[in-house]
Amino acid sequence: MLSALIWIPLLGAVLVTLLPSAWGASYPRFLSLGLIGATVIVSILLGIQFDPSLSDFQFTEQLPWIEPLGLNYQLGVDGLAFPLLVMNAVLTLIALWSSDRFTVRPRLYYTLMLLLNASVSGAFLAQNVLLFFIFYEIELIPLYLLIAIWGGPRRGYAATKFLIYTAVSGVLILIAFLGLAWLTGSTTFDYAVLKQQTLPLTVQVALLGALLVGFGIKIPLVPFHTWLPDAHVEASTPISVLLAGVLLKLGTYGLFRFGLGMFPDAWVLLSPWLASWAVVSVLYGSFTAIAQKDMKKMVAYSSIGHMGFILLAGAAASPLSMLGAVMQMVSHGLISGLLFLLVGGVYAKTGSRDIDLLRGLLNPERGLPVLGSLMVLGAMASAGIPGMVGFMAEFLVFRGSFPVFPVQTLLCMIGTGLTAVYLLLLVNKVFFGRLSESVMNLPRVRWAERLPAISLALLVVTFGIQPIWLSRWTEVSTTTLVSHFPTIAQVTAAQTAANSDRSEERMP
Image (tube, rainbow, N blue to C red; front, side):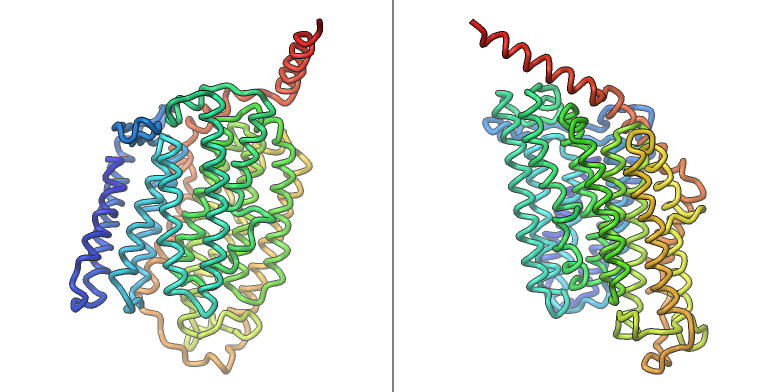
């Protein structure tokens, strides 16, 4: 079943490529929708058989591949990966549904979308670190082309910048993986084997540092964030939905799976710095969002702030904070996807994203009342209003992090208040007041165009009212991940004892 989530879209990409060009854009689109719909069904079947009470990997698959390199085709899923896996399928389906305007080179467009879905699923499922790296790098190619070909006026600059940053990210991650295998003498790159290896604390810190920067670029964290606003502004709406909703989560997932999971001693030692790093990202992203005049760039900077919450939770590494981290990943994916869909809808109807230019779009007769209403809901969810999925995710993050890092948690909580500030500025300026003369008598929004945003809004409210429907899948896995975590005092004492032993050995 896990291989189906990779190979259905991958083989579908080949099939779409072979379609006759004379068939136009409709056939590639409907075929892609059907294939991704099949992956959604497989994900549902997977959820029916998935046992949330188990912390181990389930539905494991393993085949020898290139054994001299230690590379095996090894897949598995646990509570950390499962919600992200389902979200990848759902958001890809929504992005494809929103792609009905793409009639230029449709076969290439839908082929790249399917390839992107397959590579992200493979990264979430890989249980061999080299296999993870391969999928992690494969997704770079379709995303680069999707921005460079179907993006905005500065698409070449944004796509190239994304490519360079992500390539550096991949190099650092590969260095950490190769260094771990070489220093431990391991002949395999299987995650379960490497996780059991032990290294001196200083070596762990060096390898973890490479992973922190590598995945920090992908998340992205300040100061490695500058590629994200450019990519979002130039990318089309469906690509922005996937970029914010799914692809950024490869960074947080990889950081927790491989950084926290394989280097617990070094993680605990660096955790105060990680919590402070989270504060910088949260406050910088939030304050910068307030200063934006482009709606899409504002939502992009809000993503930088909200991803900082996830780093704070991971730094605390408590069972409650880690549960909140996974819920925040899903929450941010749904809410940011909703916001980008709505901003894209406004831009498609008005031809502008300028906050100072647009006014009164909630006008029921000549405005965009449905999109405006959904934007109010999305702003409330992003600001953490009770009854929305964002509230429970942020509450768990702050509640689980406060006992460990009280000062950093309080500073990050300011980011939640700032979220309400900049999103209320957006809603108040763009959707309330008298309708601007430049955008009067707007074309009506068809129900087919409203459906993706309405679907995400329903998920945001449903998981806000019943958060247990989301948390139950991951609680056992995240608790097990940090159940044997050492304290900072234990790590320091072990390092002191090791240094003392080495000093005694050098004495004559």
